[in-house]
Length: 309
Image (cartoon, rainbow, N blue to C red):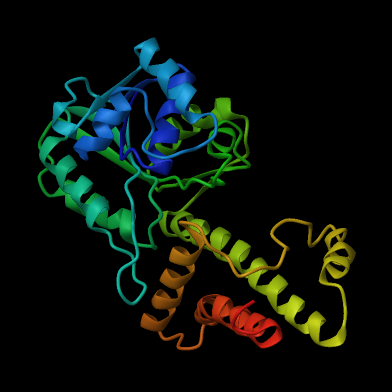
């Protein structure tokens, strides 16, 4: 299948390379010139185990090609996956500029015939519909598009593995053509496929990341309480992790959650809650607790050991 992937960041590049390795013809679009030069040489712009050799292999195979814009792609793809970044803005809301820019480019350069547009970037509910509304503005006769949202659930350091062997596939769409195409497309991955509405799929991604961040906050709070009474938090974690309802992942306390996703997604939910009447949401507490924790731990160390350590 011919597939266009827009954005060669962590999600987009991994997705493109893995799809190419599965036999698909991939058109990878990246408008950053320096990144594009690196990619054409087989050099990922970031480190991820196993990605560089797979990138080089797929370039040699001829199945993976690079473009600086969608309009450069002359062959019509069956689907376009939007995988661009959604960074945090001041106040916590996400910046949709890159996502909407791709929508406008599709509006201007939609290929004749049927195509499925899939948002894979992490976006709040309602964004995928907004993408569809933009594309519809200049849709000419002879062009038809279906709309969907399919989130990724990757772990840093295991992105290739998680893409090849996902725990589940979420297809958010209300269009039968998109659902049928994406079900057929994802079946070889061998994972459970769940179909749902656009907003449900968009929120599922946020809910998953926020819950994992919550477990870290919970572990840190239990660690603080344990310290007060002389309990061993690792023993406590071992004691609760064997409960099948709880499990053993994301339990170890420390300075808080970090990375490129958890902080951004939790603060986005906190901002979303504040704008929708939830002034004291759980996510607002999580964000404040996580941001304050490093300074609090540093103060504890200084108090115990002094300024000189």
